[in-house]
Length: 76
Picture 1 (cartoon, rainbow, N blue to C red):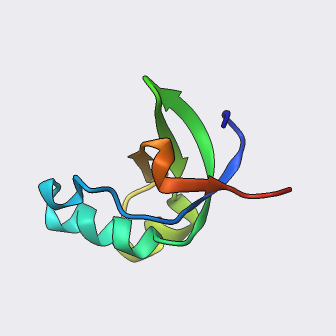
Picture 2 (picture 1 turned 180 degrees about the horizontal axis):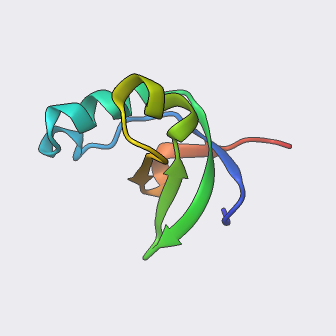
């Protein structure tokens, strides 16, 4: 996977319970959504979830970070 690829979040991270409730809710809301990879930081994918999250949860240009095993690459 590389920056610019579209991926689908298909599984919630095992460490999700360690995050604040709001962050957990955002991850649950993003499950099965398709998002662009905007960066890769030390093997962790940064996904742009702003189109789905900003209006519902507030903020601007929201993203989430997940390891590659939680997503599948979408076919063009």
